Image 1 (tube, one colour):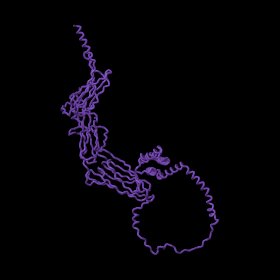
Image 2: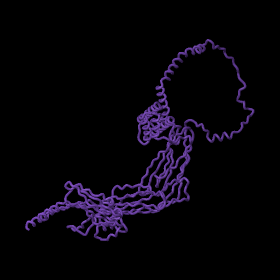
Image 3: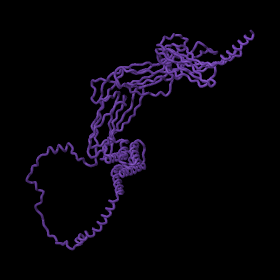
Image 4: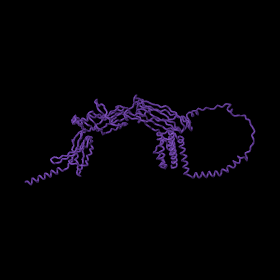
Length: 591
């Protein structure tokens, strides 16, 4: 009997030791059913230390805190108890039934996995208003608001949206994390940069609060009607005071993560009035607009260039409309305008100016009027349309070839010609009386002039033979002729630029015009078709070497940049020589 008892005790000890040595790894959740507005705690617990812990993906949840790690190691009556836990706090993204997949860990070379856990997420539930609950305190103490400058703007009128995070005095927050950044699909928008997040003092619903400006946006509505301004969603780490106190009597703070949203706001965008709308209205909306049209020169010679600048200055949607075009006589060659902007953007809108600069080159002498142009905009102060009109400009070209096209004034004179009435004194200017005198008789025969003219053809024959041989030799030199022709062509086109050496602006305008005129003659393209890609492709088709093409493009770029950078005479001479050499090479290489 005693022997059987010993066997039973021995078996019990073996089973106990085997059970104690068994490794466990499991997942435990705080609840398996929760509302979409609640939080879920999940613990991954193991009884032996391990490596390479891999949590699940949590694809249907947002990790608001974790992983936090805790370890418990104790000895009781000689028995060791070990527990290691990884803890996560999760927020569901939507309603439904979801499965939290397996987590894994490696212990003593073996891989262990947890059992998947099913979680049911229901609609939002009413959270008990427990003043001791840190989550409730946090939800009542922080608020995210979208403050809109004007809820009923006109179409194309600028408004501002400022997202402010209000914080009650009794709690502290850390830097919030952005969950969802709004996109403004029905607006032109520009983000106003915030250099640093600063805590400022203010009020929220009549109570004293601190606030932090999280985002600033300038919006210009592009549609009429009710438009939605999307919400900004933040995850805010909050330090909430508890009922416990430390040894010095101060409240102990506990940390919770709170997700806050500004909510979707709606504004009503009004259409611009149809009454009094000008036919040339292009959508400009703002205040204090001014139109200015100027010419860099009032008097110049043919083939010289001048700049005509059209600018609008004021406060409004400057980036969203086009400037009016100028109308020029056909005898003035005009290039595509260069557009530039000097605009400051802040919460009050856009302030500054936009400019179109036209390069104009007259071909013939004469006086050319530049007609006045008009610009219309909707004035937000008076709620009416306003029209601005420029003054007429007259360009006087004093030197140059005359135009073969008759002016309208000459045509009028020719149409009004009358028959000439003859009178009896019409031949009075002819003299009918004279005094004759004798002249001495001389003979041309056998004079020096006679013998010179007689012998000159015989002397010219050898000279003509020599000249003809040299001409034949020159004509046979095909490569040399191409070089001479190319050099002559380069000098022809760069003649105007050479005259302007030393005058930076005039030189580079003339050089750019010369390059364009050469391309027009060589590649048969118009000024409006000029682009670096098209020029490169056409020159490649003409079998021009790539290095020559690159040199030509670099000269064009130099002309564009030189107007805005300081340039000395040495650089201008280098650019002139480079242009002459490049034109010559293109003419030699082109097929």
